[in-house]
Image: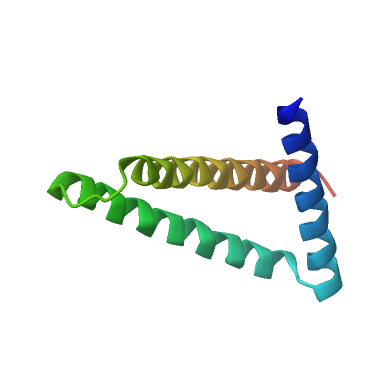
Length: 97
């Protein structure tokens, strides 16, 4: 039951974000740039967490693990988006005009 409530909340958040983007008149490229910056920040946080773990200066191991996982998942998502965009471009370039 709690998982379904969380799913509904996350869908609501996505819809709210989509509404915010459409109200702002953001272009695809600006949304993509913003997302790339977010992924980059997550990667930086992950690198810091890994170096803290390696040096033994980590304050909260679970938070460090979460930061690393977030960075990994966001990078995988970004790569999938890139792959889909490349596949779409290849498909369009194969179509005859």
